[in-house]
Image (cartoon, rainbow, N blue to C red):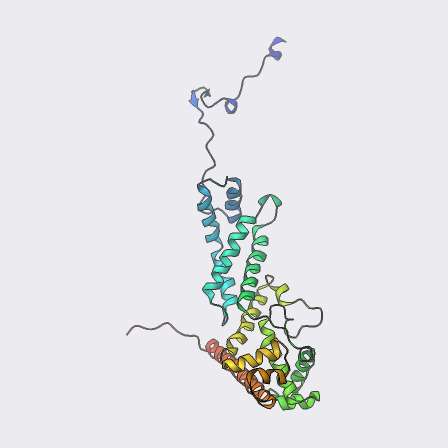
Amino acid sequence: MRASTRTALPGAGDLPASSSAGAEGAVVPAPAPPSEPSEDASAEELLSLLKSLGSGDPRCEGLRERVMMHYQPLLNRIAHRYGGRGEQVEDLRQTAHVGLAKAIRGYSPERGKAFISYLLPTVTGEIKRHFRDHTWSVHTPRTPQSRRPEMNRVRRELEQRLARDPKPSEIAEEMGISEQEVEEVLLVSEAYNTLSLNAPEPHGEDGTPTLEESLGTEDHNLDLVVERESAREAIKVLPPRERLILKRRFFDEWKQERIAREVGCSQMHVSRLLSTSLQKLRDELTREEDTDRREEANPSRPDRCG
């Protein structure tokens, strides 16, 4: 039949914008540009739209701000976990914002990965850089460092046997070393190792991941950073001269004789200052822990009216 060779008429969707469609002659409007995302649009949807726009599109800034607002609770949580008694929470929050801005710029939706999987390592990378810039790097002497696992074991055994915290003299007797050597290992364990992002985590075995490698995984690692920063605050209670002596001994690994020449006193006096400083640090750390426990047991209540 000849009718079968006729060209099919275009449907309503095929008509140009100026053509009429349907029996009622309604005009089909021209395709509109992408509409603004809804108020409840997800961050992934906002990012997809943001990446589809040109760099000069006026909508970019608004979309970027909406993504930033979407992740505010997460950034605040990370900042508070890192804050503690170390860096100011506001400084860490600003650092986390820098990481979020970098993640937004570098994210590519076409790779098929969730944004959060790109965001977290980027933010924690900024946090690590912040701590490196604001924290002394620690390189502990090999002998105290190598004795730390043994001392941890001895302390636990003595705690069980004595039903209390063992004294340094008791630890020294159990390990067969001098009390001053115990003091040095305690300092390494409780203070200076805490200042290094590359130091092994407490009670870790050989081959365990470093704190730097752990950052950005589960939240308990963020808690660990908060606790470790308390030692840096404790060191501030020491006079400048004692801080210098400790730095020379444990950071620079100087011998006591060399330290004595620099500070202008006898080697015996340097030894006494080291012991005194160790006790001050231990007392300060214990005091902070006791304060934290009291605050947890008696949380502050809001002020009442008049």
